Image (tube, rainbow, N blue to C red; front, side):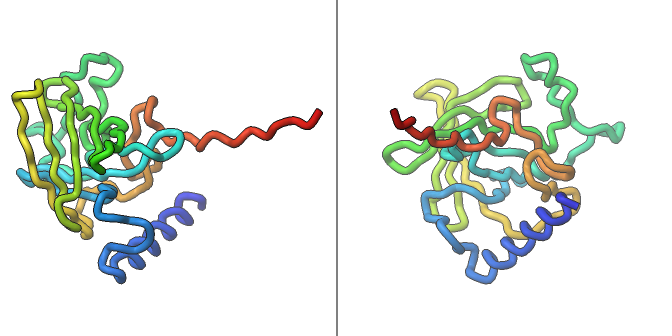
Amino acid sequence: MNFLLRFALRVAITIIMMSFGGRAGAATLADPTGTWLVEDGRARVRLERCGASRDRICGFIVWMKEPVDKRGQPYRDSENPDTEKRARALLGHQLIMGLQQTPEGRFAGDIYNAEDGKLYSVSLWRDATDRLKLKGCLIRLLCQTQTWRQTLDVLPGQLVGLTGDLNGPRADKEWAAMPAPKPTQAKAK
């Protein structure tokens, strides 16, 4: 029942956001949250707030053009250096790890590449209301920039559930949704 209530709430919020041209609430040009089609069209990545104070950005693969191999098995994170993560499916896994906002209004941190099992430095920013620039670097001089396009539709096989829920992506344990720290009150003497 809780899942159905949260799903209905999510649908209602999506309808409201779409009726305002996708700009309802506090979303600003700098806010990269949303679902994005990567430049080569092979995947969609959902960016959302994460971390204890919800001030960071995490990203999850929520759709893949080809989610299964030629044997019909889901593609796995087989190159991950953490042997416990090698059996997880790529669809739904976290690839953007808690990016922090920079003074320039960009978000910077690490992105995980499942093709080689390595982390790379990345920064991202909105280039326009429906475009996101993502710049990844192996070292400072070896960088590549991609343009991702925002998507508002849902394709067959796309994960639409909340992170951690059934039919939603799964956060790595270090970035799993945690409640914000409660303020402490000073005790009177």
